[in-house]
Length: 156
Image 1 (cartoon, helix red, strand yellow):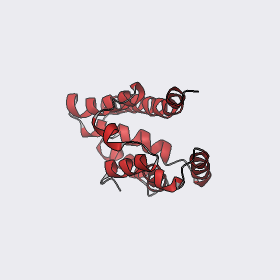
Image 2: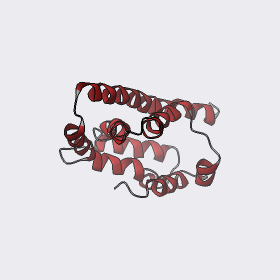
Image 3: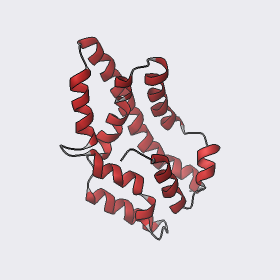
Image 4: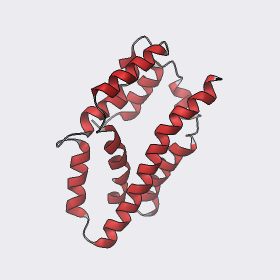
């Protein structure tokens, strides 16, 4: 489920009428998205700690894995109100995470089981929880900014 994420995102963007090539090559992430990315990049590039890197997917999967069919129905209804003819084509990336991330056998639970095996002491746990707090806050900021940024681009 973690392969070709970027291709699924590009297809979703195109179904929304967005130039995926522009987003991929010329568009800068908004500040909240950049905060989320910076935490991931820091875990790998500065700390060189793959365990800390797991804080980012745990934050994202912790949100997506708790959503349900009612949320997806409301999301699709909203896209239809925007004039998107096939809302399901524009939400494949997001809805696939709802399906795979939650439950006892989802990505979130699997990530927690990895952490249980590899976090060895209090200092490592503290460091991880610090990263998790930052990535969760950034992920919440992303969701909020994606809503508020739309008003900037819509002219309303």
